[in-house]
Length: 238
Image (cartoon, rainbow, N blue to C red; front, top):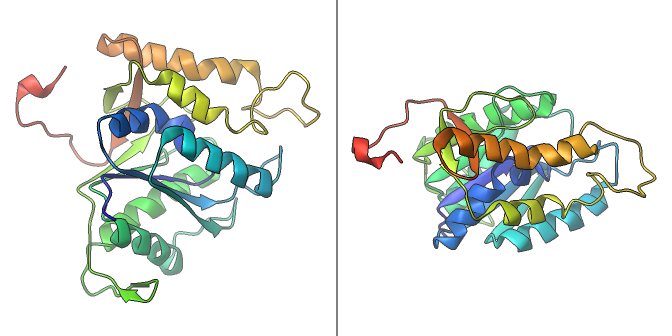
């Protein structure tokens, strides 16, 4: 099955927090989307890996993605090496996405920057014909995504472009809060974390509102790119 967009996250919930409204909008427009989690988030202060697995499955169902895979790399100890790159290459070649969305290049959690570089490197290497890969017993052909973009996470990084996600914020919030163990709950017994506060919960909406304000819409999601974004016509800009 060929897809249009592959969204990659170091941890389950990275994709939802970073670009779920964009994914929901593209799915509503008929695009095929898949999610690839690199770890199970087993070092997370709240909840367990098993709980996170269930929450990730619920979030994927909310968004309506075609698949969600988890490579089960080591949370907190991601390594950008040949072995890790090859596992991502196998997924890229199997599903042949045109666009890959991945972690922020620089962020508070050390896994985010490492995952960003790992995913970006794998996208490039996936296009090299002399790199051999076998997935589910099949020899794979080279495939390189046309575009690799990085969603914004904890840090308020200035975006290179903003997607108008008006009408899709509620779907994003539904997917994000499928991770009940991670976010604010009035009667939670677990330790507080930077993302379990009401401030962080509210920031999801007000960040989208602010990005929307900057482009003249109600809500927006921002992305950075390693290459200059190109348009066919100046009229392509909204």
